[in-house]
Amino acid sequence: DVQLVESGGGLVQTGGSLRLSCTTSGFTSDDYTIGWFRQAPGKEREGVSCITMSDAVTSYAESVKGRFTITSDNAKNTVYLQLDSVKPEDTAVYYCAAGDGPSAAPDRITRLLRLWIYCRGVGSFHSWGQGTQVTVSS
Image (cartoon, rainbow, N blue to C red; front, side, top):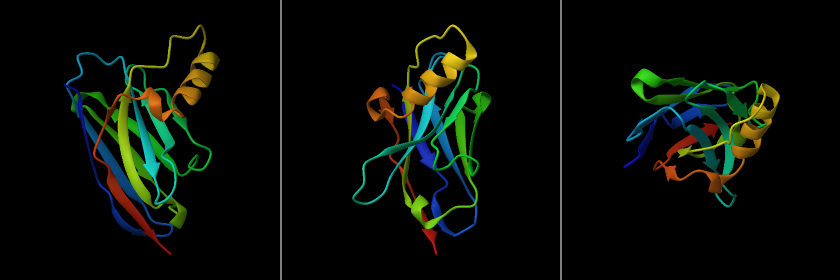
């Protein structure tokens, strides 16, 4: 069975940094995508960033672009989300999830577009971690 475990959440001041980790198990190849999502109280779960494990193509939500960085270490089966210049509105429970998409693309631009669309869809991901709380104090 596929399993994902998040860690690294905590309390951080506005403008500070935090690194989240998502350690996976149960995959038999690198042909999958890991996404980071977050859910604040009273709000819907939203996509933050994702990365393809086969070739490390990345995608970011506009709200975090330039502040968050997603990376992967395939040898450790771990995906990281570096949170820099955090804001109070980044406060949420952060989840990592695994999905089998996006579908193959004929060129890089199409691949990036398909990944961006794929990573917005909560329903596209079939396996989820338990979440880790990130709280940004003002």
